[in-house]
Image 1: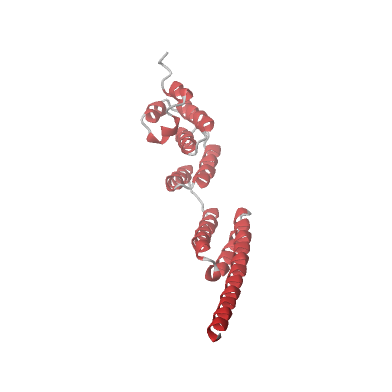
Image 2 (image 1 turned 45 degrees about the horizontal axis):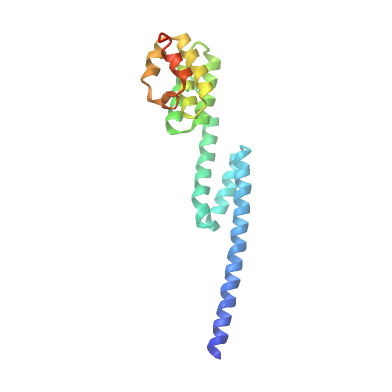
Length: 182
């Protein structure tokens, strides 16, 4: 009889702990959602604060996501304070971002250089590569066409550039790179 009472008390205790844990997890997910909204609104400082506050009590499945968002926010804060002395420096930074997979940052920087130096064929070539990698085939074709118009040697370079792998089956791409073939 004593054992049955102890077992029942133990079950009740486990149920209470389980309910408390479920409630804490629900609250953590709600805090996480609020922090992600801050990131989406570009309120990076507030998002970092919210995410760091959440980290100690976050369920294991949220911990890595929180850390990733914290790193993203810090990177965004750092990039907004970047200053470039020349368009070439900005271009180099954009290509580094592209190579690291930060496509939106790369696009933003390349577009800024294109605005500053509209005759820079290498910028349009970089945009064409970025568009190809990100599946924006029409934009890739437009930018590559502009790059070739500014510097016909870009046609030869694009023929052997692996970054255009997504475009090789597109007849418009073939037509742009091999206009002499009927």
